[in-house]
Length: 181
Ligand SMILES: CC(C)(COP(=O)(O)OP(=O)(O)OC[C@H]1O[C@@H](n2cnc3c(N)ncnc32)[C@H](O)[C@@H]1OP(=O)(O)O)[C@@H](O)C(=O)NCCC(=O)NCCS
Image 1 (cartoon, rainbow, N blue to C red):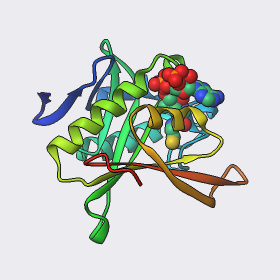
Image 2 (image 1 turned 135 degrees about the horizontal axis):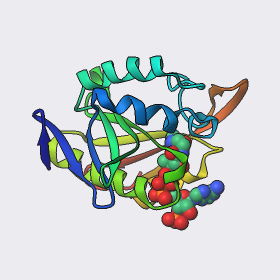
Image 3 (image 1 turned 180 degrees about the horizontal axis):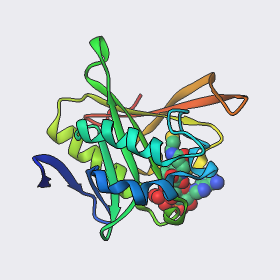
Image 4 (image 1 turned 135 degrees about the vertical axis):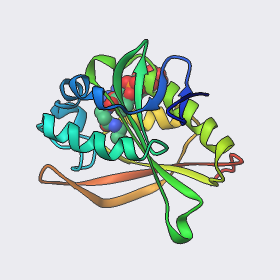
């Protein structure tokens, strides 16, 4: 771990998770403005993705550097990685979300990022459980989770409504001590 403005940066080997910066906007828009990237993401990741969307996102992400990370490869912005901590009785778990620009797909980068973040988060925080929700039409994301030791716990039927269609959603989770479901 290194530091940038006292927020964490996480070395994941093939890539690095670091806090977002205002000057990421120019690189962020062309990566994010892609219907194939947003297809498996929540609608709060819009398509088309405009300069104004990038500015709004960066304002929020820069204010929460322990929850929103830029994925960087050799100094170049490649995508984003975020964590939403649970609340109330769910406060010992957190939900992960991630994406890469299309040119970066298929090189093992998100598997490295997720592996690195998972180890970091269990070491640095008191989480008992990390989880991710994956639309069933997104097998690449499910594979990333499987490769990082996340287990499929079930299918949430018709849980998402994306681009005019109801989609079943897989829920994957990894526990602090690696316990099987
Ligand atoms: C999902 C995503 C982050 C994966 O990132 P990535 O760096 O390409 O993933 P990796 O290269 O680490 O691993 C991908 C794995 O999925 C596999 N895969 C890719 N496409 C697949 C498909 N259509 N069916 C089955 N497996 C597939 C790859 O072969 C690889 O597995 P392997 O190492 O066993 O061969 C990337 O595709 C992306 O950004 N998608 C758009 C945003 C998104 O959907 N985010 C996830 C929301 S839950």
